[in-house]
Length: 76
Image (cartoon, rainbow, N blue to C red; front, side):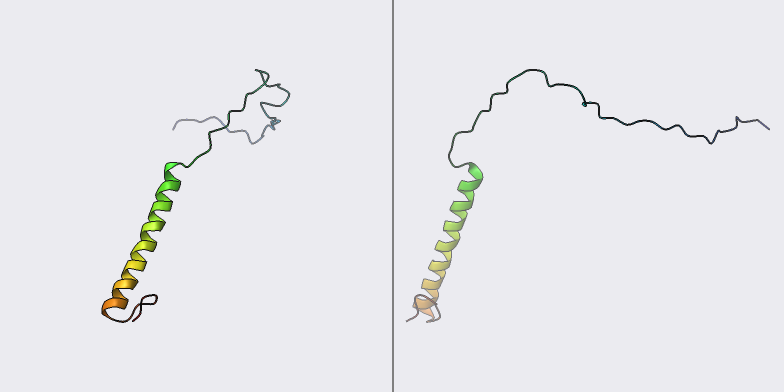
């Protein structure tokens, strides 16, 4: 049978420190660039979708009121 090395049960403690501790950032000043104001694509799609949904609900209510007398806004 093969012999194996005995394992030691002693553990070593390591001191953990931050790698960035004590270092100063290189490069000096940082220029902040602001984005131009305005509406992006996500905002535009949200607004258009909301307007189309409201228009569809009003049109549906008009048709229900005109033909079935069951509309909320256009009941006859």
